[in-house]
Amino acid sequence: MPRVVIFVNGILPNPASAKKFLHPDDFLLGADGGARLIMELGLMPHLVIGDLDSLTDIDFAKLNAANIKMLKHPVDKNETDLELAVQHALGLNPTSIIIAAALGGRMDQTLANISLLADDALSQKDIRLDDGVEDVFFCRDNTQVNGNIRDTVSLIPWNGNVSGVITTGLKWILNNEMLFSHKTRGISNEMTATTATIKIQSGLLLIVHRRADN
Image (cartoon, rainbow, N blue to C red; front, side, top):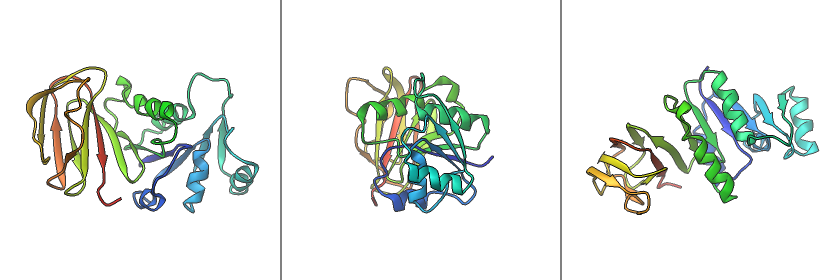
């Protein structure tokens, strides 16, 4: 299975940028109302999953006309529609999972969407939030950020301090340093090359990459 791209019922700040990162062989999964965002891009989801309470009669008509499979879950459930979609996507054994439209709108939903990626069960998976403008993922040991010069990269300690942080390709270099969870030192760094590298010794580091051309 190639990439799975999950669309959430959130905000796409730049639909053209979101469509630009899609591949022809991506498996498009709509998390409830995220199916509508896929259709607004002129595409159709391969599958829709969730309690389906955010879809209109018009949405259902379009999906049914295209014979799109829909996996309906109860409204009263312990998981969000996105968590159900991620669980299903993992069962497809994809090369990577991208979650679109999961940032912005409701703060509680945004934080919950980011927190999903912190699950230790996903530590060996390439999974991230990306809406075409911002790319959000976790670093557990080392990682790369691919972008352009002047892109913004923020390093945010998650669930505690992060030690032994080493960076290259960023304007303000960190050399085996500590980032504290109650400090803002890692915010708004700037890429000086098309690739930046981040290595850490311990902890969990949230990477927020904002593209300068949006």
